[in-house]
Image (cartoon, rainbow, N blue to C red; front, side, top):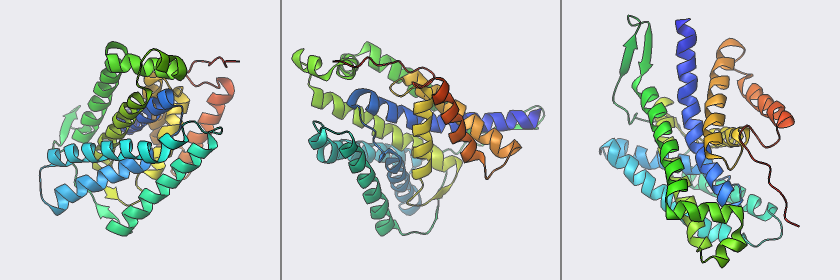
Amino acid sequence: MLSFLNYLISGLSLGSIYAIIALGYTMVYGIAKMLNFAHGDFIMIGCYVIFTIVSTLGMNPVVGIIVAIVVCTLLGVGTEKVAYKPLRGASSSLAVLITAIGVSYLLENLALLIFGADTKSFTSVVKWSGVSLAGGKLKIQGVTIITITVSVLILIFLQLFVHKTKEGQAMLAVSQDRGAATLMGIDVNRTISITFAIGSALAAVAGALLCSAYPSLTPYTGAMPGIKAFVAAVLGGIGSIPGAMIGGLALGIIEILSRTYISSQLSDAIVFGILIVVLLVKPTGILGKKIQEKV
């Protein structure tokens, strides 16, 4: 029973990381109606920034996280301005998708060029060892507690931001009808830039927590978590903030439990298989709403 609890807590920890990444995906899709497949590589860039500041320059991990958030935010906004904004009026959404994949490959190869292909050992930004329960039989790592807490705080912050602030209301208006939002005097470009900034900052936070829990870093570190977080966003209902959280947690628990009790080789296949089943039963995801097409 205690071992099952251990695996469940590990699943919640991994799921919380997926949830933070998925929140970035879901916000960008909900407002800009585009899939930023370079999102996973923003995680990797954030990890390399923290690695450089903490391991190479020997500075405080908090400084590393702050700098990573700033770098990823600027990278996200810059990418949107240079690569995605010119394609906003494109007749096919395929153009944006292909560009996003191109940006992803560009970032991966730049990291390969600058940092090399060898695996770097990442120093955890969480120094707290954690707590022991049930006479030491159930040990919860500090990074696990911090990860779950941070993901819940981010969810609360985003919910309050979207529903209680002027910028958040502008985001809701743009997601509903971009043309009408423009007529109401909302600066659509600024709103989309803010969305990208938030999503990219979340990628940096997720990167710090991901590499603290799984301390190996390569130029492809963000690729698979990025894809799985996208699956989590779709599972929860893309465009829904609570949906991204539910999808992320569900995915993390399923992955850890299937890796433990079924097969470590088949865990990814099981995750994607469950996504297919959920979408067959409920195509919009768990909390997704059906969008009426305007004619």
